[in-house]
Image 1: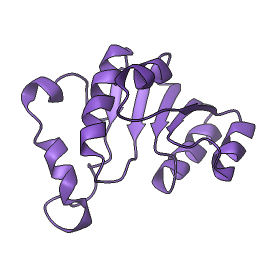
Image 2: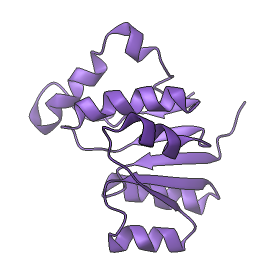
Image 3: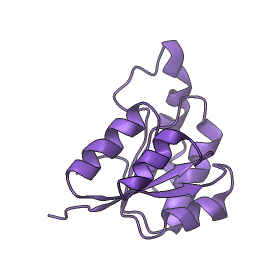
Image 4: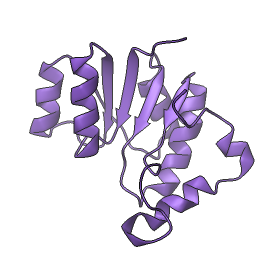
Length: 136
């Protein structure tokens, strides 16, 4: 059984911040991809050993470079980042990511504010099979 130790978190506010905290408590190596790395809460994470990567989520090359060296991507972006998540999945594949954890699982996606995430669950097979999308 493989134990993952190198994580990239995309979107580290709210849920993402909690994920980062737990990973750090367990000794994981954590990188955060963010659109704005000047936020005080992100700078505080940097002081705890987190690597920050300021990227545009629609720049596949920049995302690929930022993800390099990680084993797992945990995406905690808001529901309306559907187009960006498709780019992130392709970048994760190019960076050699072993596991991709999307943010739409665990929430209701057929109604309410997260209905946009249903679009990711319904992606065509070629994109869904780029990476494992679940925990082993």
